[in-house]
View: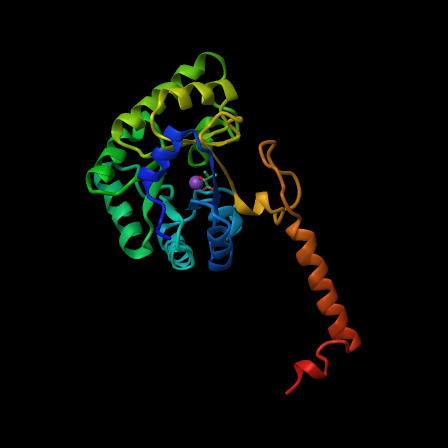
Amino acid sequence: TRRVRARDLLAAKERGERWAMLTSYDQYTAGIFDAAGIPVLLVGDSAANNVFGYETTLPVTPDELLPLVRAVVGATRQTLVVGDLPFGSYEEGPAAALRTAVRFMKEGGCHAVKLEGGRHCAEQIAAIVRAGIPVMAHIGFTPQREHTLGGYRVQGRGDTAEEVLADARAIAEAGAFAVVLEMVPGDVAKRITAELTIPTVGIGAGPDTDAQVLVWQDMAGLRTGRTPRFVKRYANLADTLGEATRRFADEVRDGGFPATEHTF
Ligand code: KIV
Ligand code: NA
């Protein structure tokens, strides 16, 4: 077995094969997802929320994400690992973007990088691609711009569909190898998927994209409480872990653990 490459994903699109992507931020989940055949893992800046407990993705830094990227890369054999460039690390222009992307490749060891932006980030994407680093773009709702976008809102409804389409064309023209479409109407995602030769990865973008991505703690039900409408829970890890924890604590209290077989 060998690592998935960006070109394999293009070939999958040509064959009409869909694939799943997940976030991962640590060695155990990365190893499980790799063994389960997930071809692409994203060390998302959503680590801000899902690892570090920040309210938004804005505070997380390259210094915080890079050790997580190394952990995920080290625990995988087949998966293409994408490192997510955090807010503030690429907006200043192509030089800043390339500098951060190079850090992610050298220090993180990932195989591609992702950044949020369409037309306004085309120069950054082109500069990174010129350096031989595959770039995944991210358009539609982009959490790093939530204060401008007015919170978590569907992008591209009605007349604004053309805006999202223009972003899709710009990132493809700039050389991105794939694009995340977040919270865009299903019909807009379908149009973009049909028009672009590169794969589209939907999250809250309906059933017609080439791939789907979810945050792993949402997919596996580790996050409790209200989740966005686009999330489907495939397990209930929060309950499983809570139950195990209560049993461990109970057995310690009542003397059931450790038993003779745990004792030297
Ligand atoms: O950081 C993240 O988790 C993401 C995905 C939701 C695409 O950008
Ligand atoms: Na992200």
